[in-house]
Image (cartoon, rainbow over all chains, first blue to last red; front, side, top):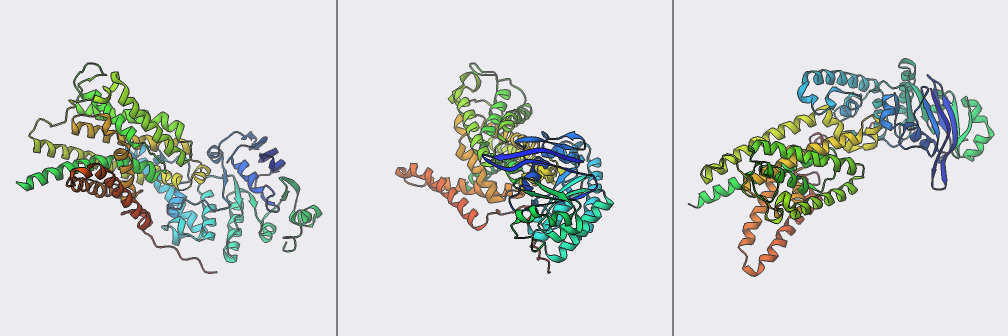
Length: 255
Length: 318
């Protein structure tokens, strides 16, 4: 579904992503792990189209999307979340979700005056979908709150919720568990599994919480110094010596 | 007969408040809802004022036009011209981060001012354009003032309702999202540069209309009227003080600042002659001080953005 081919991203002399190649099959939940500074988030930014790579190609659904802007990739069902929550802080939680669906009737200047009935019907549909999403995430009680007032964990859920407001196919989750408390974390795992099974979302998941990786992800890809170190199931990756080395023992004990 | 003088002055002020309210609404679309730092309001104001002046004034030698068209053609023309000027500016400048956009728009406004000031064939340069017809301007002084007040109030009401409705629509929601977080809006599939351009043009058209109403009220327009202090920065203060992101706040801010601005002139007029030059600084200082106080004690303005009135959410317990 996604093929990354010899991708390079260099800032001056520093290569954040260095000749990275990997592929993701449809329907999988692929875990992306690696020590800090391994280039995981940079890789996400490249796949999502936040900036163009220095060299290399990205293919999605058989098409070369290397030169496509972020918003165009979104319309192909390639949706991302952010490591640091990027909520629309002065909008309500409800509005945060309702702004997402593409090609809304009321998004053009004149439609609000010429085809008001259509805009209203479309708004009803979007609201319905947002309500379902809020119910799924168990966030109904904060629907009318400003998103900026949410807790860190709630913002993470909202990030996930936004991906549910469109017909996503490949969802990039950047550390969905960071800053989320234990109870909420289990809930988040459940939600991701359900979305994968019932909606057929393919996920790529950057995560430092090894429990979550173990539970959800197959395969697991470990990155270090901008390239793929090893790919395989969780047990194999965890046992690999190069992975141990990359982490220098810091998180390996916990894993 | 003192009260007649007062009443006349009140009407005069009310007309100015309505005209400035249009500028403030335009800026609110750009800054309050979309986050575009337009520091060149005076430029769009000038384009609107001069376009309508050229279209509606009687034929004159040595400059473009006048075309002697009805006033409403001039007003629509003013909006169209301001929008047409905004298009290339926005196309180029909206790629910049907001602080660069501010610098670019100041520059553009200054260019517009200099062109108007020096191009004889187009704008009659420093002498300006006179004989601009005012609708219902043939009535007696008081009646004519009142009639014009009625017209500008009606236009302001229509503009206010239009902006309110547009901001309440999915379009407005998308704009506020772009303002709050550009990267996230882009990641959610919104064409950010194009949408910003829409908001920039929409706001600029309102500023152009404000300029036209100003020119027809004074029956003349000269380059002096395009003073960035009065036509750009005063509007910014009005919007910030009133509450950016709130259209009623934008209008309230205009009323408050304009009344203080005008009264300060009455006060400084009482000063002895030797202080007359200093009085000008004093008024500007007063406005600056007011802005500082608002930013310090009520940064969200007198009437904050609507959805902000909610209590913070308690953090979920573990």
